[in-house]
Length: 101
Image (cartoon, rainbow, N blue to C red):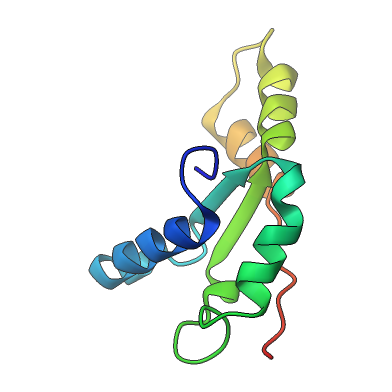
């Protein structure tokens, strides 16, 4: 997602999605290069997204591109089941370390 869209724009899109379907909270995943970690922490830690009324820090999860590649390589030579893939992705998901300012 972040490859072609800024983190802030991506989060804005997620907010719109949550307005349509609130059940997507905690199922929203940003996939970005690890080099964008500082920017992600900055956006989620010192912006209007964190805390009331949005609480996006509790709704967004993220993966690095390297996490996705590692999961793909783990299963490339075997027929992965949906539960296996879900478990691998769930273990790799990261939660923003944002604190209200």
